[in-house]
Length: 288
Length: 288
Image (cartoon, rainbow over all chains, first blue to last red; front, top):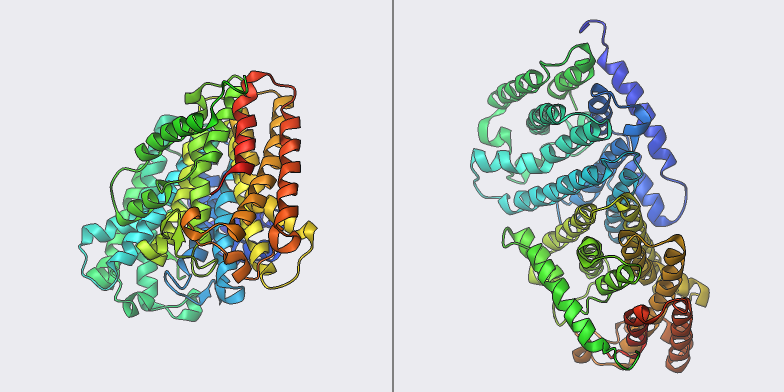
């Protein structure tokens, strides 16, 4: 089965499907709507919404039932990027290979576009059918709160020594929480069991950790052109990352260990978990 | 009945109840949590959450059932204030008689506190009991989106001539939408009928218009000390308001007409609508 499943084409098809639905959420309109579309439709891997769909399908959910969750997750992700790039935060000018939103538009518009994307995410999610919507909204709320908390701790940590434990906590808040929410919301909208929810949480937490470690490795080893965003900025900002604290080789080993943990959480599932297994592999082997 | 109902003590009691519940949402914690509490617990009239409770009780809802909606509305309101005050937006330093959040903390923290309050609002609302939660979340999402749109249009209108129609549209987005959502969410959580929902929407829309007109009048006529926020800033920013476009006297007449419309929408209710009638009156007669 592992040989018959081709992840790159699966990811491409799923991303195309999600992009079509995201475009439908962005009618042409005011300057604010243009900025929202600029952020939301920027080229991206769509890993998070793909995770929502894959988790939901694993437990028997149908695509249409799961799609509001997938779109909401991508909206929250887009929102976090536009706000993190603002001058008051990371002050970045390049994102997904294009000028950041506040460069392409202006700072006030970028700020409002982020707010609007966050608000729209919850409205989109709440249109999902089924009785689990309240729980799904609470999951998304917790994840967005965790991201704010993580970004705040990250900014406070800039330029000072932090422990490996603090570093892992920041990453778990900044990146892990939304990946966990992506999987859990898929599971909830797909009417998964409590056991499914637990397994998928463990899987997503481990994938999130691997994802962030590899992000740090790529920031230190890849070029800006390869990444489509400014490379080497962690070191420049004297930012504590897995790489600056532990070095590239140890960071890669740590990512492999997290991947093994993610795969172990899926041991109870058969071939239907192949997309999630492949997504885990991809997280660690990706080049951007 | 009108004589036996004393609005100032009603408002004070309800505001105290809401404040107690808001405080419970703000445990002491990180810098970000401190900033959230600073924004959310700042002294305020709590008119919006009081409106949610009054609308919900009018249609037979119980306080505990309605409270998540009331708290969520106040959180979205607080979020809009902290982001509107940021340097990239209105760049204000005084709010509710105290330094604005980005002055008391820093810009990044104020930005994240607003994001976190918005996210928390939806999580709080989703904890409401009953089947109408999905609909209520959609209402809150729409209102928050409208506020962003209104703020964006307002910033684009600064320094240029705008029509009375444009002005009313901006105000309806910036202020009206959240008041309408406050009433509608109260009605939904209180299991009101479609007719209740329609009447309360008309009422809240008219109250929202009156509220904004009086805000403009107060900005032009009251002092900074009386308001607890910077007075006269509309004129200074060459901002189109009801007062700068129509003058103080015409603006006051317009507010009275809106009030009459709000009261007419409540004509089908008996003494149980007294709190809402008095809230309408208060909106126009208030001094800050």
